[in-house]
Structures are given as structure tokens and as C-alpha cells.
Image: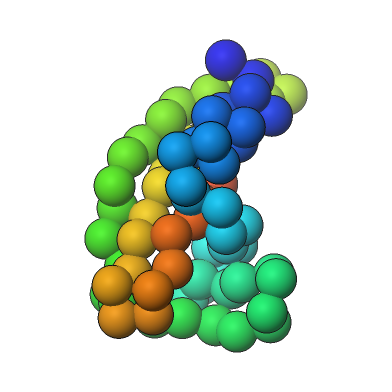
Length: 75
């Protein structure tokens, strides 16, 4: 499955916030905030290949911040 198809699929299930995984936080591109990773639980992991490199799309949820979303991690 392509990255775009995975993103569409997780967004359809309510994981709408696009996070970037940084060294010590999850960065929310929509609001410019940074969140501690320990405030999130990983709900799902979906491997895919992009340009010959394996990557992982992870869905996350934070009850503390009321956010659900996803980020992409290089495997």
C-alpha cells in the first residue's frame, strides 16, 4: 500500500492530525505545538515502502491533549 493510501485510510478512521516525529517530541504541523511522546499511545503500525526504504506509519492518540493522528517513522 502506498503512503498516500495509508494516510487516507487512517484519516477515514479519525486519525486526522499530521504529526512529525522529532528527536524529543511530536510536532503538530496544524497548530505549531510540540507534544511529549509519553502523552500518546500508539494505536497502530502500518509498514510501507517509499523510494526503496521501509517506513512505518503509526497512529497515535492522546487523551491528555484530546488528539488523534499519525506520524511516519523510518524503520
